[in-house]
Image (cartoon, one colour):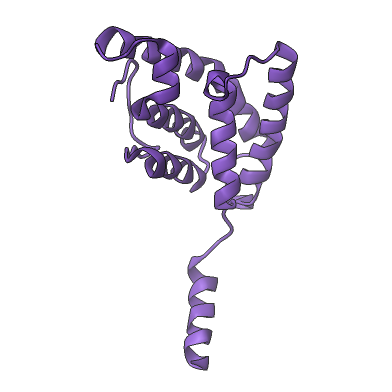
Length: 169
């Protein structure tokens, strides 16, 4: 058993590296989706409250991706800032897609229903966020995010996938 313990230690040293905590990554992902779509929590937030939450989420993002250290292609704060600057465009795409569900799915009664209840919309939302981080060169975390959506929806979209606008699952 002692030799096996040493082997495990060596393998872990050779192949394992620091990654963000899984639960913290899931919380960040969930909180960001809920901020973009507060109806998921039956909330209406003021612009000030949204700004404060965005600021908090940006700090969480810095902490999460900071564990990658010198494996990042740019400074942590620069990557987080770039990611958060992409959110308005991502949000617009997602709104367009939610409206597309309404137009193309006869079972959809409202955009609110799509945002709150459709697993495909949730999976695509998380994919679009994860894809933005992937494009910035952040390792592992984007996959952790899409795996969270996969665990909740059964829909597995790799963050490196190239998906155009108006995507519908």
